[in-house]
Length: 116
Image (tube, rainbow, N blue to C red; front, side):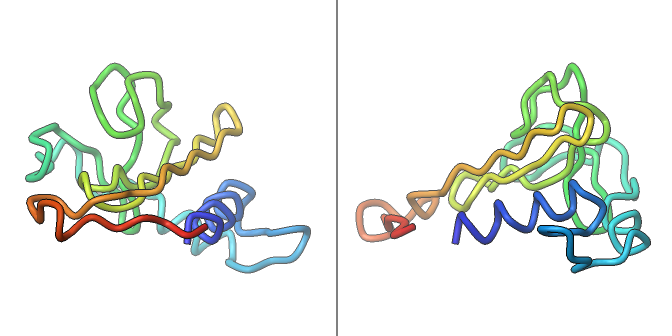
């Protein structure tokens, strides 16, 4: 799964194109990354988060799953502690994916490993 997430974020980073092929229209990318909520508190982490219609957005200077240095153009999802943290930042051309490894609160029985 992490490879698929990485490929998706890279496509959105490039305006909806993967390997020169359009997989999403620029309008779809713009809508998915358009600010819809400014500073709503993430109930899992307790941090204020900027949200788009499809992603969490970067919040420069704030602690988020994308880090304090993420630009306002950064988009993705912090992973809510138990799933893949994946984001991209068009301002610096970076795509980041960290596979999740445990289900929050599930203890040893909920632990799972990525095979990718």
